[in-house]
Amino acid sequence: MGEAVVAAGVTTLEVPLNSPAPLESIQRLVKALGKRARVGAGTVLTVAQVQAVQAAGGQLVVSPNCRPAVIETTRRLGLQSWPGIVTPSEAFEALDAGATGLKLFPAVQVGIEGMQALRAVLPAGTRLYAVGGINEENFTAWRTAGIDGAGLGSALYHPGQSPEQVARQAHALVAAWKAGS
Image 1 (cartoon, rainbow, N blue to C red):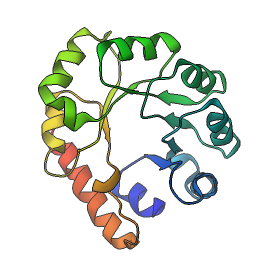
Image 2: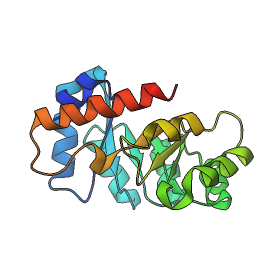
Image 3: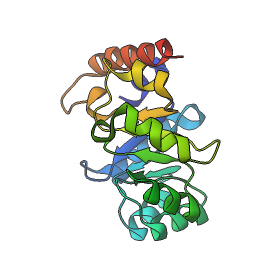
Image 4: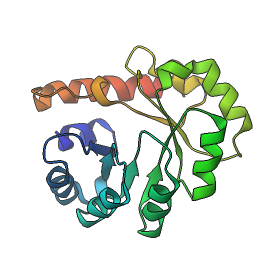
């Protein structure tokens, strides 16, 4: 699956910790994809989980929430930190704790206009990824509106799909991203 996604042009892969054998999957993806992709974990909620991701070779930590201790530990261990935020208060708390960038989650709840209002108060250069409800149909609109990337989740992969199916979805999503530039 990792090879199919990377071949389509996706270079950051997140394995949710609430999926089967996530740390083993991270180890295998890191070994198989080497320098071609950045691999890490999603749904990271605790400092202990950050440490496990780092031990597995992960390079990034993505969370659905904003916990300064998780962000600070992630950065201290040399990993990228992408905490989930919805409000400006959460965004600034995450940035103050050292977040690499911000995961706007759930993006579908905030919407493009809400994202743009949030973007207007963020420091210049803040990386903002939309996660939750982003798919082939709306990816171009989100990019045109100003996101720096997105978490694609179910728009990219459903359990039981073949690598060929995932490759087709990945190519369609990359095309939608490029159409927004």
